[in-house]
Image (cartoon, rainbow, N blue to C red; front, side):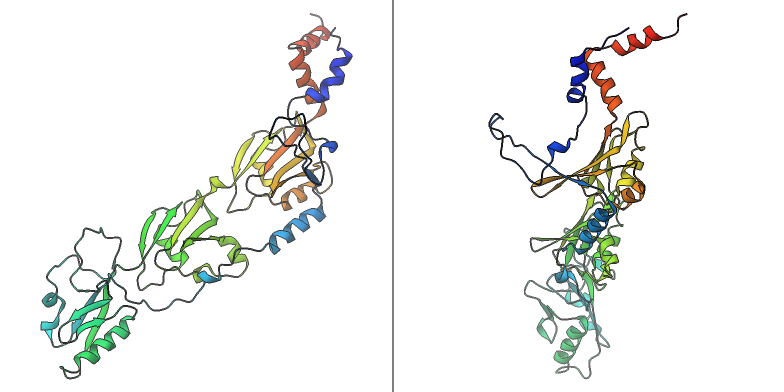
Length: 379
């Protein structure tokens, strides 16, 4: 027979392993540091909120009303491609072969429709008329011709007007043979990160990601960053679709950098009395409390206290602790409606009996095993 001393029983609650949540530990703010605490230490009194249907509803409304970043500067309608410095033009004057590309360009390289900046910088430019750093090309009879900022049709009409002084009704075909002036960079969780040339097909956010091979399974479509002129714009594709905004209306310009963040950067941590404590990545920025518990194997049936399910979240300068009583009617519905945020900690407390057992095991190792053996049936 094992006798448990009174001081052991009285101290079980205070020395039981694991986290402990006490109503006296909560307040609506933070208190001043204890004078006996070490220098720089702070006493943080988290705010306790019970998860109820009203709280789930208010949290959902707050998320919907949350002011998102203004991305109006990124939205626009696709327009025709404009020629810029570095582009190579193919120009043909009908019935005048002496004015062809080969007669005016000494170096010949790979020729192909839509050649772009993905070609190595050391590769010779294709045969044609290169737009110089001032946006000018040199063409026989027409002389220096400034084409930067013009569309292909505008540049063709301008050249035809210049040649009309020397040729009768000149017929000119002008197109961009190599797109080399404008490019964007796609990085992060895409199949083929790297430079993407802007050509006559409008470069939208969706187009750039598709050209990069699409988002990998490890990518987070709710965490796409577009950097333009040093300013980061955070794009949540699923949220844009819900708001009725077509992601294809996000137009990219030369110099933009697009980064698709990894799902591992937005994790939720599940610990305590669950079957498989783990860190869970969110699914495109979305994960409910019910999903987090389910993916962790659920509450441990032998040691978990279903009435003490906590979500610890940092909101600004304060810590907020949400508590769900899993034994209450409709608890599963509330858990399914409660959306988690990145870096949330989901904790399931142990039952009083489990805490008592662990406390005795720490203080008197083997005591409980001896007690069970002493009261067992004689052989």
